[in-house]
Length: 117
Image 1 (cartoon, one colour):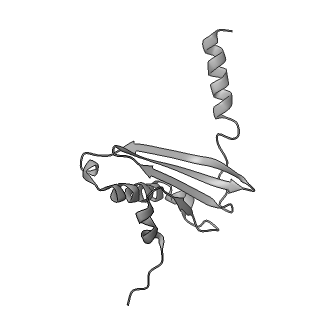
Image 2 (spheres, helix red, strand yellow):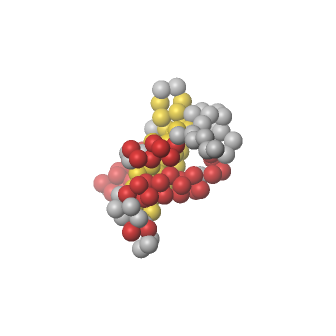
Image 3 (tube, one colour):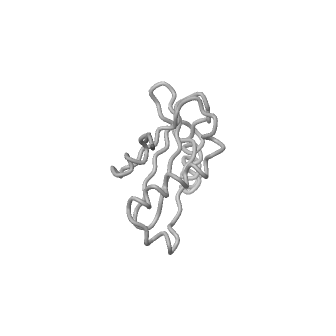
């Protein structure tokens, strides 16, 4: 067996076994982690079973020319909005609220419930 074949077999085994991928369970708590840099956004959709967190899906994309001009908080919010759009079929009708983790502190205001008069 060649070195290339050994590497290929190891990668194949790693990508098709736990902990790389989990199965979707709408009854389990759902976790969405997002981040945005100056040039791209990323998101990871995970499910939590017992004390383990298993990734379900991953998304990343570069910003368009117009999006590159956004402020930092707008880029972070765009990552959250794009994630909810892309994984809407997973997130609608889940048993528990979706936990969203981001590293931008200003978005806490966005996540709080407001009462408008």
